[in-house]
Length: 391
Image 1: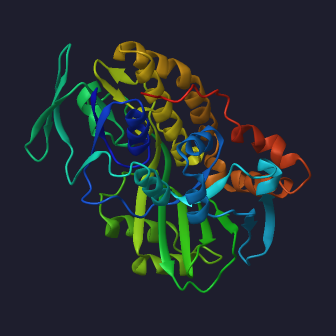
Image 2 (image 1 turned 45 degrees about the vertical axis):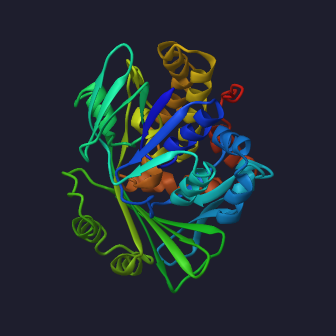
Image 3 (image 1 turned 180 degrees about the vertical axis):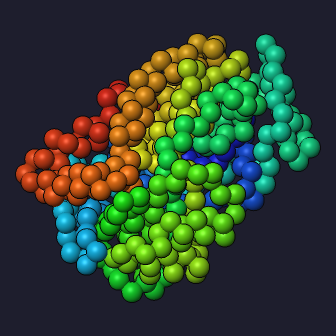
């Protein structure tokens, strides 16, 4: 089948890879003029890691990624409040790596080996479908027909709005905004340790990267209207909300003005009763964004893409394939979304009581077996992957 995939992040190229394996003809379209840069580090594990192994990309993920040993909560003076060791949750950590989201996307795209038509600086403007095909009108003015269209275009999916209606799957905003950026030459380094500092209303994370680079991730409570899609306005909001904060936060805010990349978005979820309409389907954050707080969106996107490709391979009936895809994954995704709803306390405590609970939990994580008891289950996905798609 001729299948248009809208979005060349993580879900889109993963889906394209497995559709190629099954003998389909995928086309990728990406509204950005180039493959994206910036974003944040993702902790990559679970069934998504199994998909990456089946793609043969794990060695490159390890080369580009990091094997962080500890997440350490600190106080205003930088002293340890508590910490959790990666090994306490993941055991031998052989199926775990932390990697920049854009590096993960780049490795997946490279695995396509230029076998897929990629349309950059364009997106879908209109979709018209009947029993046999989907007519696509692109923003650039071009028109083409496809057997299926898959929206892999993220939290703010245009395909979802076009196919499901503007109000379908409206974002469930969790009251927190996320910013991530990198700079070179920051004065403090703690290799292979993620340092986390929280006050009421926010958490600041610092991670040392290779080549004297540092990544900063800020999660901030924000109940008002979101700033426009303008880095200056977004950074102004962060400076205003974090004015007077302790630890290294003033220095971290100063780094924003010379950051190479800057990412900003809301922590939101998408919950839909179905991930398809006719010949149009959704995958990744477009279908069921679990939010940044879930910590597993990229891995889940790869799982969704893998399963969707496998189901399309099993059947010539796209309706049956879409239905099985949703039936297989919806319970898992919903459980991740439900779990994420309670994690705002860790990422941005609302009040002093939540801050106390967050810090007390971090102290307890250092006790034998406590980290595995509290968090270990979330690192083991309750799903058995189907056999891979094959022509």
